[in-house]
Image (cartoon, rainbow, N blue to C red; front, side, top):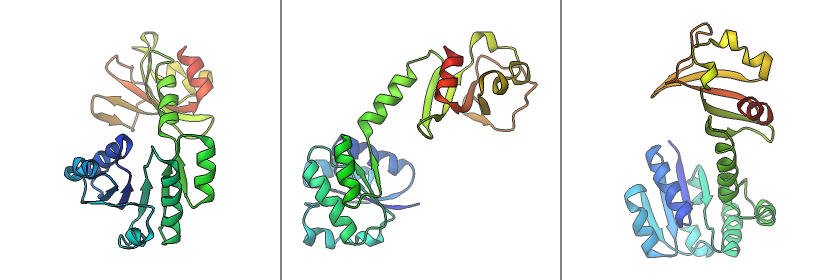
Length: 214
């Protein structure tokens, strides 16, 4: 469990608050708007109305005590930048800031952000890849080239074993788990025939996986 300071409770911030609550973390949520704070109160440990660009307010939060500070402000870049810089000035351990554009990311990094995230761009990339093939169900990038995919089993693979398909040699794809409903099987029997109610968790280069599935 981590202690997290979440600043900015627009749509992105609210989704973060709900997910962090599901994962069992302690979250202090901050926004200048009372209605936004009220909305997330069921999902957070505590919520405060306040201006995160004001040093006197931020000093009362004890930002050094949080494992992670997330700046989720999306509609006011100047406030996001000032908040990020102020967090680092006050000794925040790890600051994650939201950016909409590359130029924003550069300024945020120069002003104290330890990590910069691009929710809109990342979702756009996920959507493009997810729907580039009928067999891609989920996708998690690991680098510019490599990613983890969850894929449904193509019809011509059903009934065949991983040994006979020889995906590593033929397509440079590594299967590291099989999902069957809620069950994740990591101790794979490579000789067992694949079934239509299973999905494969694979890792490899994006170009190799997409070439194989298309």
